[in-house]
Length: 339
Image 1 (cartoon, rainbow, N blue to C red):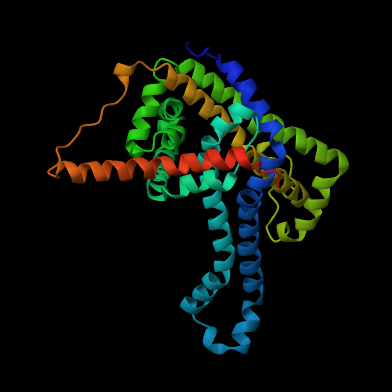
Image 2 (cartoon, rainbow, N blue to C red):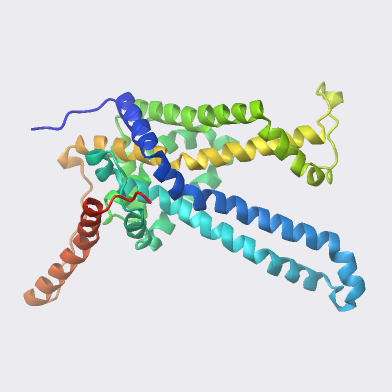
């Protein structure tokens, strides 16, 4: 009996349902990865800010500090705690994208999310390959900065949208192998994949952030936060663009824009699980429909080991691979991560 195919729009609706039905758990899971990045950056900014305004007093009190290299070293040292918090949170954020992919099977069976720690550990165990994949993504993003490459990179971005799902579900593939498999999966489904990018992008990057921002505007939260950061914003000059037909950009406008941008970014990051669920479902759909003869083949190298040694090695590899998955399934059925 073949599995009934789902339409891209049906997958989009189901992924939204799975995300919001487990919203409280995803909210808890993503809090440190999201707010930790904000906290880290705030700590870096505040420590360097207070250091810079007190620098003349420190130099007057301790003349030996009046050296550029010494001042730079001190600035770096006092910024380290904030950088450490940011890097830790950012790493957890990247890992979360792969971990949510791993949770898909349980979500589809029960509609619930189980055992975040176990799924997260599965991704962290493959940290080297995971970092390698993000390194390739970083190179691609760097190339995409060039305006001449925007159209080409936008097309390739559609083909490479499933690389992290391939990484999660096919651990035997290298980072480059994940890129190739993503391209193979999307090939022939470009328009449907592009439609999903538009749908999930519009929902998570525009609709949800704007709804919350407008709600905050209505109850005065944005104005309150803007006034709180206004003293810092006033350290920078106002922009007078009247000669270009643009009204003067006031400090209050800059403060309000900054707060709205931060809120939008937080909400975009909190909806990462929704995007992860959607692309994991799309991967499953396309991978199930991929002809067997089109699957990438790996060359087998001859081994000089004796049959008994090969048997022991294969048995060891077999159980070492299955143990994490079996452990997750066992823990998933025994404990619902309600905390």
